[in-house]
Length: 234
Image (cartoon, rainbow, N blue to C red; front, top):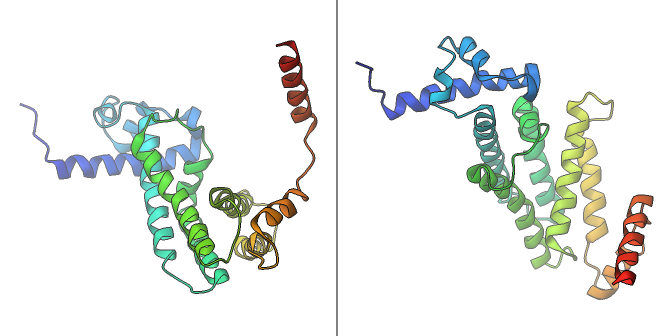
């Protein structure tokens, strides 16, 4: 008669599978990963992992969900720190860098591999949105204090992109002064670029930023031309 497992035992074994899976994903990549090898490394039958996760995509989503949750917790804590604009933004940047430095394998799994279809794993999407919301909440708070001006979601995306880019370069071994120093410089540029100016109205501030918009690429020009032809044809 099969032994009945408690929920605690099930959770413990799922966590054990995740830990070994993280090492496998880092070693062989997403394409090279298979559940049979996972079972072998854990010391169970080839089919045992399927009793806990339907396939490698589900176990990767479970790993990502936990990692995004831990990152979101750090960012939420960082939102309570600092008083000035620079201090608040630096607190978010520092928390993000610390997470990536302390959990580099998990950080790579969060961003390096292909993404599941939207709504495939709601809990993962929820935790990802918590990270996004931390950046947006920071910007909205600064805008409420009249520190910054612009579209909060867009500024949050710019800030997240800048921080992630510095970390990605560092994890890839690209030579630079260091991710924290680079992030501090990018934060300074982002904050100064979106800083609210009493001498400028909102419309004038938006126009000033548009004046520095890069020209469209050849591909964008081609798409715009094709759209114009479609409109003319109609």
